Image (tube, rainbow, N blue to C red; front, side, top):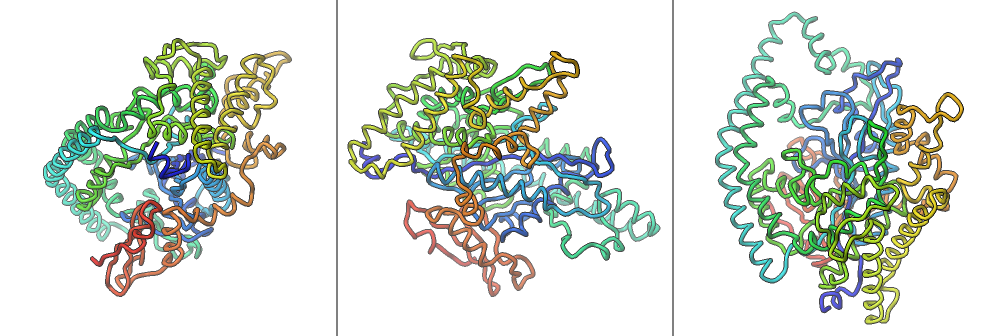
Length: 626
């Protein structure tokens, strides 16, 4: 209990969320599909957002933008698919310390995306009638995306921490070997890109002018005449030049390059899988998994598949293992550590030095089994419950927490069980999803009560009490539906899957008494998540604002600023200070990532590390010239 006595507050840890938003373009001419690419959609959204607030590029350049309110924007569509229609745009909240701040920040970035979709500007030759943004987890074709939660917690303790650090040393050695082995492949890619560019330049000089203009237009590039007519607000693309050069290579060269790099980095992937499976976050995987699997019953957003079957969670459909990279070979785990692979395989040699960050006891636990909720109650219960259980795990108070015998099988059972009747084997016997949630809730309630009595200062436990309150209310609403399926009124706008299920049940066919066609019900399934006045959830909540838990004042505040005690506050201040400035060399004065910024002033590049509450103001003063 000494650790909690020092920290003195529950639900206080660094946390954040990343949400992938699906984009859909309604063509202006009424065609079935617009030819506007994912890259162009992202550029329009990015420019609209950057007109609302200051922003700077990420350290690696390219598409990522860090905003003055602490959030970040990025194009998540695969590099090879960015010239196709649609696309996924990821927006991440600032890193914060309280569930209440995280819910407010999530609401803020939802509204930023909603407003940007209406304010995006399009040229006359772009066939765009309207841009729709969907905050969901699965599209009509079955592709999965959506939300990921991040929590700072102990990666291991005691002897387990020592073993973990030894394993990271081996990973570090493997990383260096992989970098050295991949160097010839990288040089070949660079050489091929230079040859491709040279040949294109030579061909453009001997080709007739009209053909060149037609070729540019077919590639989505404006010709000089079009550039002269371009409005002032439309900036040229600043997509990373290395990405453009790579995409311009022949397809077989791209495929061969990617396959070679993946094969060369396979030892590093295997090493990370061993670390993730046997050394990292063992206590969390043992005691938190039951909560995450069973919470689809109260925090799922619902999904209608091609056969007309209703599932509690769209995100859970593709989950196939407990812990893994997440996407390297198409795997979709509950716990994701692909961000470690991204750190180890960065775009510069600096990534080798950054590996030392993995030796720290406190690491980011990323949860992939998370639906993109629209309901404030679901968001609060989802974040608050995980934060409380992590507190219990760190305090070694896990005796009353049930453990699943087969987590993935249990998830599949619960996801199909919208009647909430199916049971799965646990360490406490066979339980339903609601019974598992109730056991977790009661254990957390007892834990908070003991801690508050020990402290004697109720004001220090406000976040924990609010988390318990919203968690209990979510369980109550779903239990009410289980007892009587007609008791849905109180859950509308508060339990996402319940509200969607109710809307689907209201749909009728053309003839009286006939069920609605699948296409009609699927439209409801998707339009429920639309971030606009036409979105079905938005239309419902506009008439039931009493069911919202975040005030407009809090949302507006988080649209402009990160919480004062967050590292993102320092980052936001620097972005406001340097956004838009140009260095002597002609590039942007400031580039940043989550942990540090590079500031180019007077031909001297300074590295600034952002402050963290855990080390006072030391981080604000850590600077060095390079």
